Image (cartoon, rainbow, N blue to C red):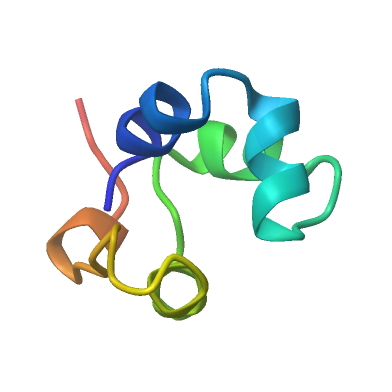
Length: 64
C-alpha cells in the first residue's frame, strides 16, 4: 500500500491516524522515509479488513 492511497481515502492525515488508531506523528515518519514499513502495512490491512493490501514492493525505500 502507498501513502497516497491512505491519504486519498482518509482525506486528512489526522483522520487517518485517528481511524487506524496510530500514533499522532506516524504519518510524518512514513513521509520522511517515503513508504510504510511492511509490518505496519500488515496491521493496516487487518484493521481495514483488506481494503488496503500490504505490499513488499511498496515497503522499500524509494531512491531518486
